[in-house]
Length: 226
Image (tube, rainbow, N blue to C red; front, side, top):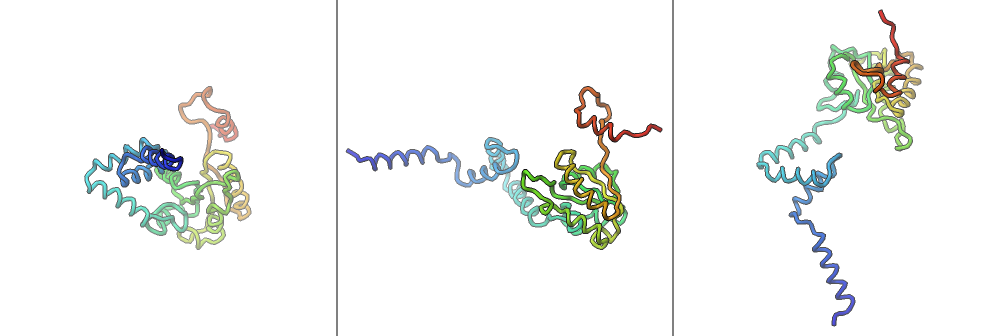
């Protein structure tokens, strides 16, 4: 007759065998790493891992090398904080840009979206987020002081050009608007023009389907018809 300790040991051994992953350790680790990516669940992570397993060694190593290259070579521009593999970034280094006009955005992806329109000929500044007290994100966690430094000291700006206008292109949210207002107060003290991207009704939309916030922006930003 076995004692209680022997029975407990048998149960624990059985639990470990039941909970053990059916995949080899390396595959399980790959799945775990993929599952850490934003928007990737366990099932998607498994599909990605099996895609790597089915790929040729050259393709798999190519992915690995691309990840290593990104971490080794890509950094933030020392002037505008855009992602770049050279410093200053190509936009800040471009003498054809209106480097006295700075368009302020929250993230590098916002900069890319605006740059793809081909309509902004000035330069940029990436704040790396917005002020959000609920998330414990304050001005010191962003690049706000670096933006003000570019205004105060032209030598810190792209091409050593004096800043004449700052355009806010932050997300039209409570946090984005609050961050813009906070910065605008400081920038106006420096006698620099402050503006923001226009907001309002998108072309082709119908009023009955537009939310109140967009309608309010459209009314406040109404323009004279020529």
